[in-house]
Image (tube, rainbow, N blue to C red; front, side):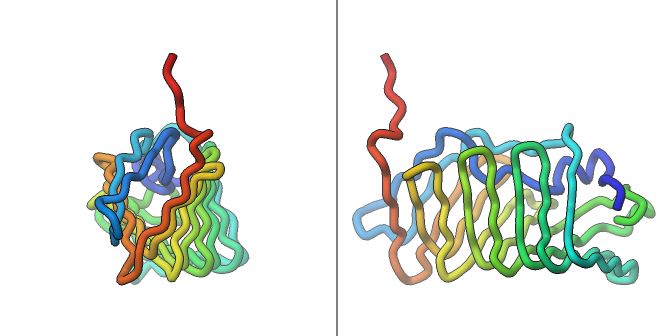
Length: 187
């Protein structure tokens, strides 16, 4: 499959976690956690490589379904899942097979794993809405980690324009484990 066009590349895969994030609970017994992911960026200058066991392009529904051992790599960001469905706009005559599709949304499922540099996230499912620039990872246990710092909830929502992130507990509690040695010190 050929690489996506420049506009589609810009939105095809997103670095989830950026260097130096710190999530702060919104109160004792907090059920959600909010933060800024300061380094969150959309990348449009690096090629995207997609691998899967099967690819099915459905022109009528403007989708491309990647099935089995899906792996997407762009720069230092890697996304892995069992399935990935790319929804694109038919406006302008673009298509996935010609490499000039305008991607609107990407759905991933079955053991979602996202890594950017030293940071990782795991979830059951994920949706990357590229029109609204919002992505959501969901699951019984959504885990974000950087080194020994670990954040656990059931839904992570990130506003890509601002980098604002929210981790929900969905009726339970958000769990945060911070390693004091990972704190940056200023001299």
